[in-house]
Length: 347
Image 1 (cartoon, rainbow, N blue to C red):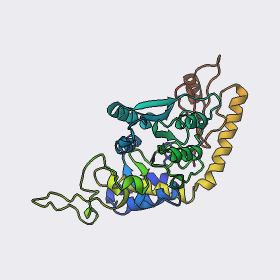
Image 2: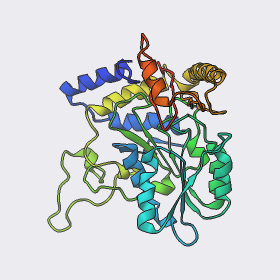
Image 3: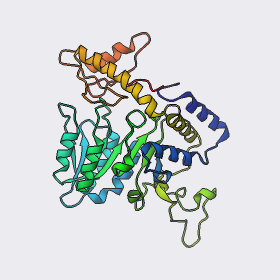
Image 4: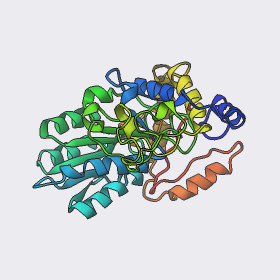
């Protein structure tokens, strides 16, 4: 890799694209490869492009506003969940009279138990959750939660940024989730500035995009500029599938080749079935040593993230971040809300 998790082949494609401005066709291949990671029931027509996870979740929230009605007014999130999958729902609750319901961190680390208990009350309109918690990697049993959501008619929205590509693959299509978003700069090994989204037909068929533009309209793929009718204006029909939800503007001729190179690598040489056992071995070794030293460690954590929480009497997380950075070679970690979540290198 060059910087962070981005492979050299991805960076090389970005540099090449600056001089060649080639992007047509890349976005379609990106959709196809991302759909492979979502599950056999997903296809390229179910994938839309967004600039960030926060944008994607704002899109989901806008199109799920109608679910907040009657006694169903709760939106379920986890304590200290990544803000990209909380703030859009806070705004929705503020404008629709909903209630943000925060699940407190369970002592045993099993998020599914309190989430399932909350769902049984019949008041949850949307469960907006991750596959693993970004602060410590603690896993969320989405299979059990998805089954409960289907049973009670709750929309399940998943931020897979921290897990997709670095954790055991979930067949999101089979689980019946409503919407999945994953920024590509984490375990999809891509650059900043792109988020890929999956939604099934039942969501995208009637969904409305956040911004209104010409590139997602019928016929836009075949022309440089859509013609404008002097009486009716521009074409209003959308392109088929989830493309209708694409953010405005053409797909970036720099970002798309980089994302495509990363996804080809991730679905080929670095296929999760090959890399995840290695990640699990590395993170489990870190977890075992940390427990022996007295750190708090989640009982079940994602293979790619394991959070270490200093025990009472230990220095705080920032101390360990500074101490590890001073080593030679330095060990680069960050502090997240009182813990240190080391993550094995993906390559």
